[in-house]
Image 1 (cartoon, rainbow, N blue to C red):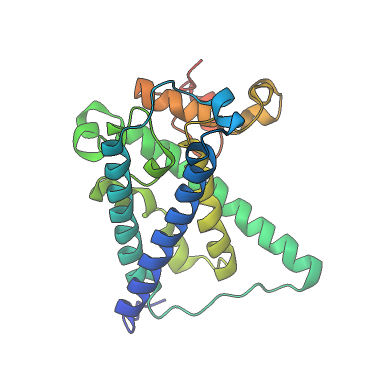
Image 2 (cartoon, one colour; image 1 turned 135 degrees about the horizontal axis):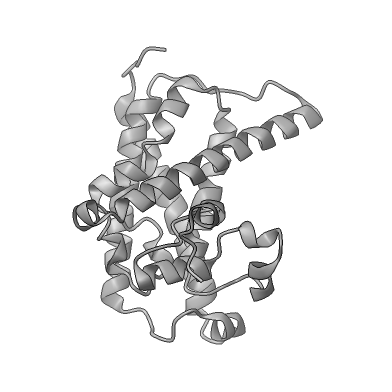
Length: 241
């Protein structure tokens, strides 16, 4: 497969817009639901830190997240340029199974990559110049979901480049995955634990990643490196108790 650069700029514009819009919808929706609705009993009962967000922190998170959206869209504008739309091969029930299998594939690959890349980003020799921007938010708001430095933003998404170029993942799966990924990411930064605390002790559900876990990560700046699941943290002994 060769790289066809025809239409790179239109593709960049489209993908920058897509990444920015999905971020604003997810983060803005979580902000409105949990934090703008002042009488929300869910927020009052399940907020993870007593300290309120500062205006300066929220504005910084929005700015750096939109910059990340620019990086994502620019990178994938080059990668996607000239590639055809990949369709599901099956019909009916078969298509649903095919879609689910591809989506699970992306979630597992991304979760694995994210854990190890995130853990590497916390190594003392690279943390300061690679990942420290994200941790300016000790009390992250939903808008912190994509708050990365420029190089960190590249590291966040570079895993997808060889898959896009060489693995025939259907385009619809990529689209759904992109919105699911940002939704889960935002929930991890929303400052509220939306799920029952009992789930964190459930023999099956405990393998998920919870907002509580990622909030601990921001407070202690270590451990709980997972994204969608806590599997790698449990297996590698980096789960914070």
